[in-house]
Image (cartoon, rainbow, N blue to C red; front, side):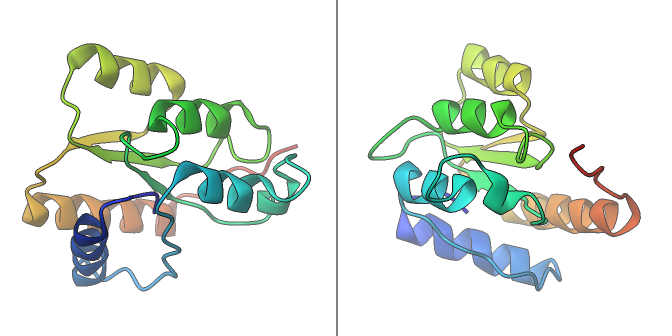
Length: 137
């Protein structure tokens, strides 16, 4: 989860748990730390090759734009198939379209209807328990 607002991060995690998802959530308050985790010390992204990732991404971060993070994630051979859920206050239709064009799987505008969010996360969890994400060749 890449979210700089601690209150939002707590609410998101609470609702993910309420949706029955018990996977580890690794929180990042800025894009730099998140990208270091995703792409590793060498920047290649190979460190994420075997990880099952679902990225929850805020677009308004203190050090960089979430769109830039999304672009980097989707451009990297090791992370491009990782699903990305954008959770942000930005409701500009051009920004939403740009995120989908870059490969975002879901775009949710805050303030979030947390019952709807919890249901979407539950469905994503069910989806990922049934569907195999293809390995990168």
